[in-house]
Image 1 (cartoon, rainbow, N blue to C red):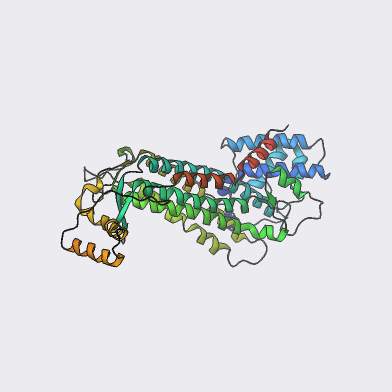
Image 2 (image 1 turned 135 degrees about the vertical axis):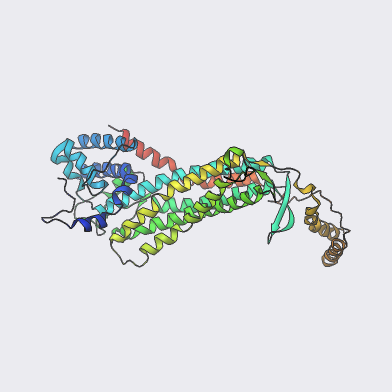
Length: 447
């Protein structure tokens, strides 16, 4: 019979156990690889301070690498009766190596163990999300450049307003992702700090070398104050959730535009038919269900910061079991966001644009501002020019000049896409992902 890490000489009520464990074993499967990585760094440090023998460390590391590969292949299982991922890893070590496996918990608590697991998991997922954002960004920039000369109506209040272009439309969402990536970078930097060694939140009497585990795991720095390290549980997830919600907001808005522009009333864009769905009763239907689901999923993701906040916002200093519930809303959210990014990038790549939209006379009034500006540039006071064009429109005498001469930065004739690409590049370079990859590879491959 497997024992829990905290087990004493009495049995807990089974219903209480069911309730308190909840979905934790299911959620811990997300963390299995990272629990192993954290343990590898921790025991390497323990050997350096004499708590694990020099002859024991190689055997422990080799077995942990084997467990890591099991998790990497998706074969890691938390067995029936085992409470969590930490217990399962320790059990697997003890089965293979005997009492040596029981030494790995010295100098840490499940509190800082799950903290480091969450940080390692989250920073990895943020790397994947950043890659997904960049892929979508590249698709949007490509489409913006491809259709930079194709005009379309711009809207305010859902009324036709002024000339826009597909170069502007695609490029606007690309630049929005630059700002979203900046949020993501801030979340990543706050995540990439080492809590290991804070134990239950008050440090340890063992002479732990926290800088060593920080370096081994590729963290930028550590959470220095041990109480603050524990206070970071929930706060990290909330900050990351805000960054994810920012990206989701951009995707949701773009999805709504795409649904609108794809409808027959607008007919500005055409979605690939293999990306649409039909109706059980109407043979003509090609519904933009993918964009509708992206919109819904991303709107749900925008609620994530509030969910995390409401779970942890009235907790005083120290660990509380409430924090366990954050895992249930936080860990699966990455898969949903990554899926939405991938689907959006795919459909944007396949999207076709209609190039004759403004031939329809219903859009002639959008050129009224161009005419007002032309008259003002010739010397007529702006308000007089505005009144003249307004009266011409009312009298049905307005004839638009559909040639557009916008030259300032970020306008129809000067999209500044090269600068937007440079901005994205600068933000991406600021993550320094290579440091993390080098540290993890060294830990996993160094015999």
